[in-house]
Image (tube, rainbow, N blue to C red; front, side, top):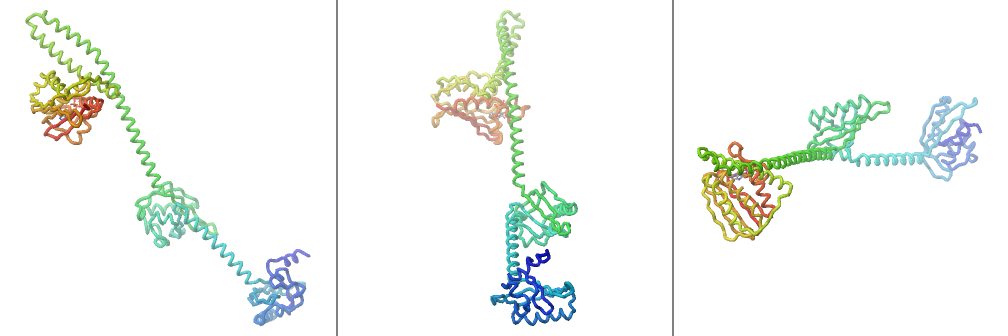
Length: 500
Ligand code: ADP
């Protein structure tokens, strides 16, 4: 069998050759398959009588006559769709193509046959497969969590938008399809999107836009990371533009928050470092000052002893100078002591030496010890002290608090009366010191208990802003509480509570 014979035998379609009278000369395997009729059963049989239904006979004959009348114009195909007859008697639609050709000087007619039922089945199957593949692709695109959109290349109108895209922009398919960016977004944004689209299509290459703002319908302004890709037609020209956008707004915000947190943390660390440096400096300075101060104090004491040996003409002046120097030195020592206390308190090294004390007695004692100072301020002091306000406290430290609070009452309420009370309430020893001075603004009332915090100008009132800080540290070390109630221009009441 030569190779053409082989090809004929095994062709995927039914094939036969007929003579000009319509008798079957050759018959391939697929033809046997279609008609259920072997070659030996149909050779030299007239094609029409054996294989066609009654209704198809006439059509076949007419076509055959046409072919003969056209003098067998070779290679013209004549297509027919006829009802054919299988060997078992069943009818089926047949696609029959008749092509007259000249072979070895004789004319033969080539017949190509397909069972249309089978063909339709195959087509239907193929369509089903295609439909399934489309459905699958659709499901993939629809379920991509990023926005996916397609624009046609000419006018950049949307032809496709997936679910994530619709949700993000807050529009429906109906709103978007057939429209372009200028129908939805502010002009500047639409200009930017269009420019990027044109770049992609003109350069025929992908563009990666790391961050672009977009105005959405319900979610305000969002930020996208977008990739745009050209899609080509069969001639290799960009016909569509595919866009894939990830909404990076939340990530961007989280990063910003993180950055701000980091900055705040850094600022806090810097502030803490600065505070530490200041504390270190105060501690060193206070310690360093103490040594010359002690020496100076001893020298002044020595000078006092020499008073009797001074020429009587200068004795009075000498005495005044020594007294004033002693006073100045006392203030200097107080200041250094305060600074040392700040260092101790900041380092948690405020050590208490507790003994049984009566708060009312401590107030009285303090007033007596500082009588001259308080008299100078021209303040009348009204006392209302309960008997036996007893507790276990550090006498020296509590006196220090009382001095601080009375000193402030005198400083910020000079010339006005001061009321001091003590009593026991709810198992607590309570001390109140009330003045009628300048008062404290509500917004300052908390911070004045911090180190170096002041609510007055240095020009008007001297001071370092340490007294209340030290007082609070002392009271807290006793597990007590100190607070203030104040009305600007009317006065302040400081309350100390100590456990009894
Ligand atoms: P200093 O008096 O040396 O400034 P303090 O720590 O004793 O330091 O007080 C802190 C700040 O609190 C003062 O600068 C002042 O603004 C305010 N203050 C304290 N006591 C009173 C008071 N009795 N009346 C008004 N303001 C006061």
